[in-house]
Image (cartoon, rainbow, N blue to C red):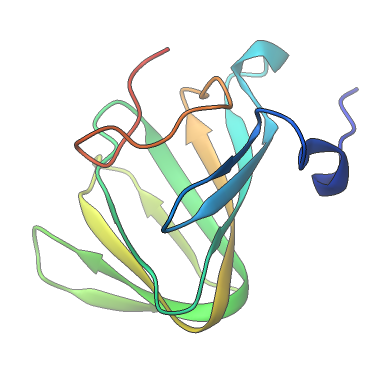
Length: 127
């Protein structure tokens, strides 16, 4: 059984901070379960461009408000507490935190190592 807390991971390589977001990777590739789970925070007013060409991602909002733009279709969807959105086609998207810090529980398949930041495309390389 794997049991971890945000607090204990906050001083490890699994807590990644960038100018646009911070993410604590709670379950990672080395755990061997086939996916990774992250708690990601996008500060109010921040915008994050993402394009996970090698990963599927599902996000569940647990705090704050924002919006996600599906780049190919031009559609924008509200993201509020209780909203889930899944990038089932490696969708290029732009996430913006509009009211309060946006807190998301994110699941990636395949899992990431845990210390990555986005590459030039706004995604992660296969590790």
